[in-house]
Length: 101
Length: 507
Image (cartoon, rainbow over all chains, first blue to last red; front, side, top):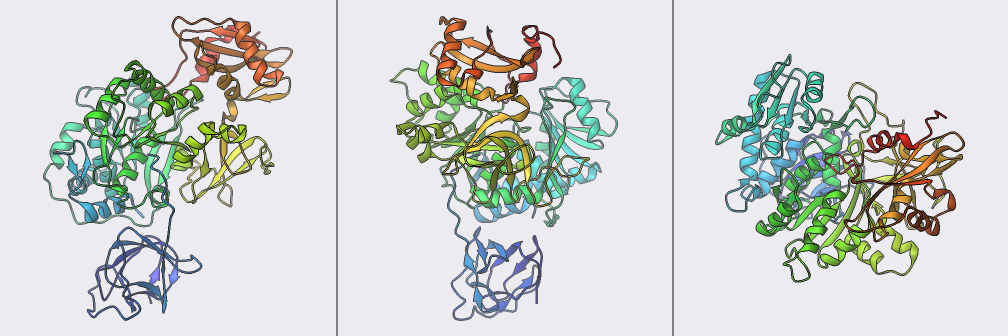
């Protein structure tokens, strides 16, 4: 099971999705497309996202679990959906702020 | 977490967009990424502990900022307006280091132990077309990304430390990735050694918004550049906006205006209400944003948005109207409380010290423990109060509060009344020693050219609007007020210039 810490990178084993952990630590069953995510740099297993976990990921979006203990940032998009175990992560909706810089 | 992660995403997501410079022929995000990589090789080879820059804004700024992040070295933008001796003193404190310097004044920092100099031009030549190394940077977020020397209005300048995790949290929490449309351009006229100058680079890279730099602020140049580069957003400090308003006013009602400018944000000091009101009138289609933040909080922690500006401007309700002078509401990722001098929270509407908490808040200086409480709160040393709807009103530095007869008086409220007088161009209130009252209130006033107002008339204006203990004991007419180049009023200088108006007592 992947061990998470902020800044660690994971890659999907079934699509092109890559993420960086923003929040969360310890052993977490982080999945993409229903299959366990791999440490960045590991070779993909191939295969396709499982049914029910094929909504896809969007570049630059953050995804969180229900109680917001885990948050990941998508750095490469793909066809799989992110999840912890069987529970899919939610897209973190942030109200757009006006540009202040 | 590393600042490079933001640039890597930009280069992956929209590498062909122009990141910096003219829309035709500027540096793309892919170019910027490659250049940062090449710069990191040069910085590592140098073997120093810091990468610094004593130079105006140019393409070398983002290249060095990201190159230092890639190399795992803190980036230190130095104030090139300091005297040679002051600059040398700061350089010694970050030695051994490599310092990017202005090719036009190459001799300024020579002969300092451990300091290597690299001209802006040499840096840009050596990164031009170079292949970047394999991406490899520290992702723990704990490394120092930026050290910014505070302006040092009291004592020796302190180096505020901003770690990668602070700045990345700020950007992720406040900027949407690729949130800018391809035609957007941001005009940056604050210098690199101001936190807003750094935040502008980071936020606009992540948003995918082209950056246009104005290395030395001049209001005519600023207006010209907005028009020439079809600038859509900009950030200014209050003194800049005052000058811009003068230029637009001088062009008259049939002037071309600033048609492309969709958004204008301001911060870094108290905005005189006549300036912001006039700016709202002159730029009816521009969205105004007031951003409040400190170096130690990685820039913005609260903002007053466009709709809130127009709503306040149009309202007859004095509470809503007063919000035009507020810093708006805290960012969703930031908590703000107002506390008294023993650290207890005060009731809504009561004045106190502004405390902030959030992942972007560092509150740390080099060589000392973070000034955060155990549960992460940072006392800003700014005074303020919050209204019932959560709008934050910032009244100024706590150290600037005048204590007269045991009563605390905020200079800001007196200044606000004075600058609203039609004859007054600028005003500052300070406390000077007074044997009987502890401090007496001195108002230094700059009149508009050709305008006149008597001392009694101005004192009456304050007496009519504020409690009687706010009335200046003396009004001194002066030709100008002392500001630093980023628009901060130098009260210490003013107190010293006007020291003869006190009675010399030491309390």
